[in-house]
Image 1 (cartoon, one colour):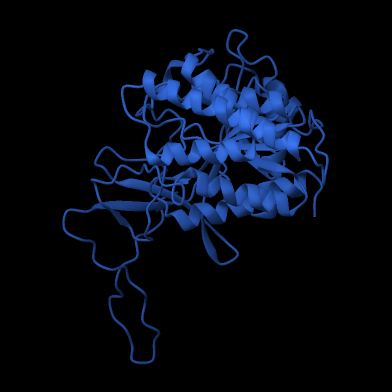
Image 2 (cartoon, rainbow, N blue to C red):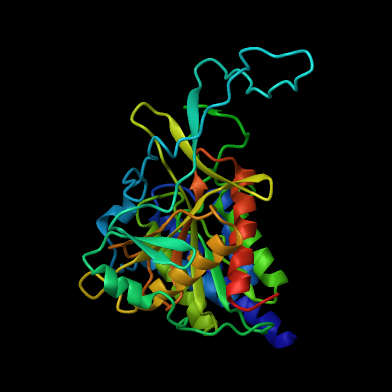
Amino acid sequence: MARALRRLATAAAAAVVAAASVQAASSSPVGAGQAAAMLGSLLSAPAAAAGAMRQMADGAQYAQTVDEDELGSGFWTELPTEDELLPTPTPAASSAPDSTPQETPAAPPEGSMPIAEAHYGKGEGDLYIPCGAGTIKNLTDLPAAEVAAEVGQPLPFAIELNSSEPQVLIMHTHATETYQLHDDLWYDPSFNARSTDNAVNMTAVGAVIAGVLNDAGIHTVQDTTLHDYPSYTGAYERSNATVRHWLEEYPSIKVVLDVHRDAIEYEDGTRVKPVAEIGGLKAAQVMIICGADNGGNLPNFKQNLRFAAAWQDKIETMFPGLARPVLFDYRYYNQDLTTGSLLIEMGGHGNCLEEAKYSGQLVAQALAALFGAG
């Protein structure tokens, strides 16, 4: 016990120094939300948190693609087809005395902008490769046969159930991404769908995933560092440092999930919320993203692809319609750090928070089933 307290005190002192260095190097002050996230990470894994903050202060650079630091790049988004758009609820034209009144949406406030609901299908055509109950959208130059050969291959890692050491790390490169806080088909155009409040941003969704996995006997840790605050640019370098330090402290970690939300919007400002009805409730549709090697930056990409295909199949088997096709493209996302590194988009900025949290529960249940738990 004394040794543990000494270790915590040493790590705390290092973290304080690192935090001061981050503050001094930044052009913007460290906010209360980021300070709270730093403290949370420090308490859950002192050495990893302190090391990560030192690395942030050092400004270490790692290989990445240009798009990943562009706030409005939106390369992962795809507008729904006309068939995928869901009808907007409208008042009934007439109602017989004995009929059940149709529920209609409340009138949106003046100055608000519309949100359109959509349900993305599995996709059709040469780009889409089956993976069990799901599909993979192949945007690489790799032949479909080569991609398909990885589907159904064994996972490149083994999860130890009920382990005393962490097996899964949940983290958030863009932690401040958030959602609508009301379930209406309109949004306030002044709302930029970002928040440092961990009760409503991506860390809240990640906490649901971590909770389900831990309850299933899969030892999971969550890092709540706000890597995209106060500066969005450089978020992937900072999250790279965070993951490296977690892996250094806990080599037992096999899986690293970077949990985000998408942003799908028409040119006229209409936001799109991808949804699926699961168990009578509305869930935010999810999308797994797996990077492909581009000049040697992801040597283990096929192992990650196996994991993506297996998880996609399990999600769609258990909860049909929940997952959009896996996006397989030339992206980096720090996915060279383990053979179980993936990014998952939990809905979009048109979804409400509760829809995203419900999806977090569902994808975690599928992941636990994939790992043989429960």
